[in-house]
Length: 212
Length: 71
Image (cartoon, rainbow over all chains, first blue to last red):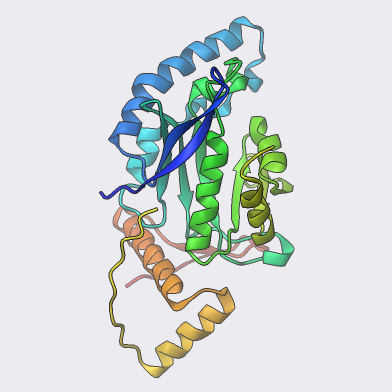
């Protein structure tokens, strides 16, 4: 598999400085080893911290059940489902799987047009404030991955249109940082809120560089 | 994203080209983008069928399902 690596930057919370990182247009064995050897142990400890801090189970991250190796294996070789990852400090900081074929836009002005649907996107546990990593090690991972989805959408002639169902802890990120339209809870998708980005919103998101 | 591409010549009948152009206009896609979409979809359907799946269309209002016969 040929992997294209693009330079990006993340904000290192410890130094307050931008740090050089890489956007890979794939999820490789390197990422899956990081997931199993680094993400999962940190995630277990984080869930334990949440429990001990008295946080109700319904507020624990719902992505804790995701199995990236299984997801990646199920979509291996499928042209419709490319993956992306962000690498910084020799570790995978985020991963994303998208669907370029099966979903269509729902916003009235774009209804029925093709878009890039973000099936799964996740930050490394140590970058997530809701897992009580405060401050998170790196900031900007989610924005880099959303930007990758927008660029893929433009590359596919979809004009920057993207869509996704958001886990509750990420609603604000998609609405405010990404500037996506909130189309409300989707009863056909576990009641998760559905967000969509129009071509105009995609341009605005690119122009502001992922800042809040 | 991986942008290494190869070029091919495609021979279509007038009717096929007409359908391609109509779909491109309807979907606001270039011919290349539309054919790449078609290839992905074909691969997806083949993959699901090979693993024992069936392809259905469901009427959004009536929820009636109709199986698509793939020969």
